[in-house]
Image (tube, rainbow, N blue to C red; front, side):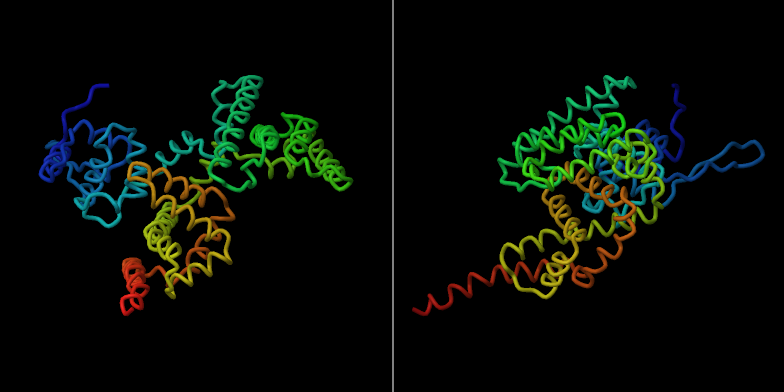
Length: 382
């Protein structure tokens, strides 16, 4: 592909960035434009055969400066876009805008790229392995089984080392890991492809405690449901239990309006920004009305507690990893219709505790610093 020489607007943008200490070639700016990452004004004809001219939009520099900071190290442009979209407010203050106005097209392309690359969820890792088989069903099954039987034992060992309690996807034994691996492949590839007998046997391995008559009844019902799904891949049970494909997940994301996507991003940013103060208050036992309100909400709302826990984890990530945890949390909200419809209520119930996050942080820190002085007070009088 042969590129034309830089336009006047591209050259001016290079010069503006250079004036702020950001060295960006016009070729890189051209790539950003073609990806859809830069707000850009359409060229306007000068009339009477005089050609055309292009001008920069007011927000173009803010986006270009943010992208320049996010691409100081060699990395995919999609990653840079997600860094700016999720953690742009934490970049160097050369970015004038409080929220960098990235174009919708670039954000959606970057989110789709992330979803295709992400394998943090066991089902996503299994699906990615199956996709690598190149469309051959037998090879896809083998690759999925190999990935699952590698993933879950590793998850068990890691959880055991960290003292993490078992859960729905965290095995409590190697036998449980083996059973979960088989069951997970069936969820990803479809129970009708896997076979009812193998799935029931996998569940038996994961639940050795169900060896009584009640357990026999449970497994009999499960076997009956699975056999029905085997004969009808379009059945309601089969559709509800199957892991949505990458294409389905991207389509769900595309159905979320961009304005709503940005509002969710902004709300999650507040949770991330508040996390250090809330974590410090919880560990130090600080008494504060806003902290008490947040903790009361967490105790009553499982989803809000989950969002706060994941936001807290993002707040502890180094800058080069924060975008990834934030993007995963954002998609976690947007990928489920149930979570998406309940999200506004799940976060607004925290109001007004997070209306003044800097003030909350100062109060918590002041009370932490005052606590040792109160403890030392009586001793100093003796």
